[in-house]
Length: 424
Image (cartoon, helix red, strand yellow):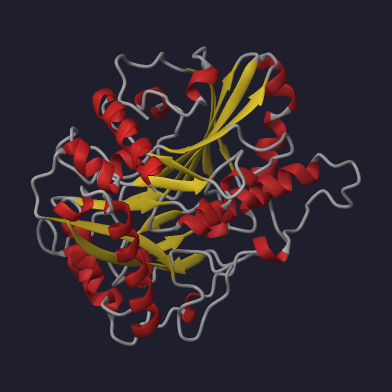
C-alpha cells in the first residue's frame, strides 16, 4: 500500500449495536488469567484485519439478506469464545491483568455505508489511509479494554468489507483467524437448509482449548513481564492503554529486508529482524493446536546492512531465518524468553524488520457462505512497523506481501523487488 494523497470520504454509519453471546447450555470459562505469552503484548497496538467480499447488489439487499446472518452467527460463535466478549482488566487485588466476562457484556458491531470505489479499495495497490476507516475502534482506556470489535461496511452494488479489531493480549494470529473461521463456519452452516439444529456446534479443529495451566512458567517469566510493564512511565503503572503505534515518527514506515534497506538508504551498521514462531507444538510437552490465546515466541537475528544490499542479500536473510529455526530446535523455543519483554521496548526506537501473519493461516479460505474474500489486508502493520504475509489468493503456493510506504518509496521498492526476483 502507498500513503494517501487525500483524506478518505467519510462513512455513513447506518447502525451501531452490540452483539451478545447466544445463551449456551454448557458455558466455557467466563474469566481467564493471562500467561506470559499474553502479557508480552499487553500494550501493543491491536490487530486490524479487513476482508473484502464482492456483493453487486443494493445496500438494502445486504441489510435484509446478509446482515442478519452475520450478526446472528456472530452471537452463536461468541458462546464458544465467551471470555472474549468481555474485557481486559487489572484489578487492584490481582498481580496480573485478567480477561473477564460478565453477563451483559457484548461485542461492538458497527454497520456503515461507503460510496468509495470498492474495486480500488480491494485492489493490491491502494492508498493506505483509504482503508483505515474500514476497521472499527476498540474501546480502550487505562482501566479496561474491549478485546474484540467488528465493523461491516457496505459499498452499494459492489461489495462489503468485514473489519475485525482484536486485542493482541487476547489473540495471536492463529487464535484470531481461528475465531473468524469459526464465525464463518457457523454463518455458512446456517444458510444450509439441511442444518439439523439452529445452534450448530463447531468441528474439532475450530473448537477452542482454554486451559491456561498447560502454559508452564517455572522461572516466573510472567512476573518479569508484569513488573516491566508496571515500571514503565512511573511505578505501579497498571495502565491498559495500548500504544498508538510503535514509532514516534510517522515517516518511519515499514521496511522489507534488502529492498527496503536500499529504498530507505539506511545508515545503521546492522539490521535486526524479528519473526514469530508458533510454540504450541514446540513446548515440552506440546499443547493442542486449538489452544486459544497467545502462544508465539520470537525468532530474531542480526544481519550486517552492507550484506543486505549486496546481490545475494535475499540469501543472506534467508540463511539467518534457517539458522534461527535450527537454534530454536536445538535449544528450545523458550530459550531467552526472560529477555523478550526488554526486546519489546526496543521496538519503539530501533530499526527492526518484522513480520505478521503467515501463509499457513490460510486467510483466503474464510468463507461466510458467499465465497472466498476478494482481498485481505492487515492494516495495523502501519502502526507496528511490520509487513504482512499470507498465502496468495489466486496462485497455488504463492505468497502475498503487504507493506506501507510513501508513493516514491513504493515505486523504488517495486523496481528493486522485481530486479531481485529476476536475479534469483
